[in-house]
Amino acid sequence: MLETLGLQFQIPSSSECHLLKNCPSSSKQIIALNKSDLACSSGLQAWTEYFAENNCISCGVNAHNKESIRKFLTLIQGQVRKLGRTDHANYTATVMLIGIPNVGKSALVNALHQVGRISAAEKGKLKHATVSPEPGETKDIRSFKIGSHPNIYVLDTPAVLSPEVPDVDVISKLILTGAIGDCFVEIKEIAQYFLAIHNSSEQQYKKWAKLSAKDNDGLFLNSTTKRSTSSGLHMKQKKQIPTDHTQDCIVQDVRQTLYETISSFDGNIRCEDEMAALIARQFSALQEAFHIPTECVEDAHVKVAGKLLNLFRTGRLGHYVFDNLPRNSHR
Image (tube, rainbow, N blue to C red; front, side, top):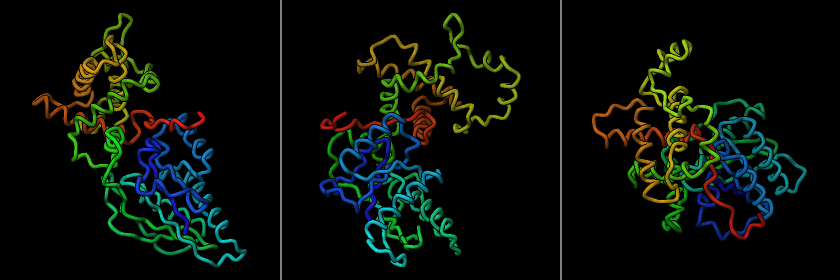
């Protein structure tokens, strides 16, 4: 049996299944760094090289990209052939996919099943593992065929999460990326945690400098001025659905708001109280960007938090790798 460990590329260390942490790596184990599309390129390369230096077979993968899945499937097939040690192609191998909640195991299974069956020109109805943005959706073990000659089956398994999480930093990252349900912590606190990280990362928000709507005097343009600057923008404005925060125009407004609130901040970002004041200002500004009415400030901020986290978790607010390389790394 070939074992595949599913990790979340934004948190490759924090998303490690600690119950299996002491198991030695081998040719029977592949580390699948899923959601690579959400990770920054520099962090992606650094962690891939780190695993290679430590003799671990790893692969960055995006379950929603067929080319990425083909590359991952080719790696699995190559490892299976090495383990088979036979010239015969009519044997069967099993790949067990394991990991903590919500690292995208079921999405990977569906993609491997679809691409593998099509590549093998096999007929028959495709099966589908249940995929959900909420952790813990997979309740039992199911088998999906992903290759022929040799026959390869992958087992989609329920998530495995240690009852003891090492420290607060790790559990915070697990909650932020959705590995642990939002019901355990107030959603506003999770969004505040994300904003604290985002505000400290110049590399992220400075990419949005071109979106700034400041005029030459450094003043913010109000929404009426912005809409009247171009007839094309005015036409787009008519098609907007204010409650749909996933629209490109609203996402752009959110990015612009984040950039302008940070770039105009003249306090000390390392001071906890001043960071909290900046985040409070951002919540108020984002309420307008998301077109949320001001009937009740606290309820409005909860809605802001939910929409903000959704955009972050779907990669609309930048690419992040939150885990640093281990200290014993040569980097």
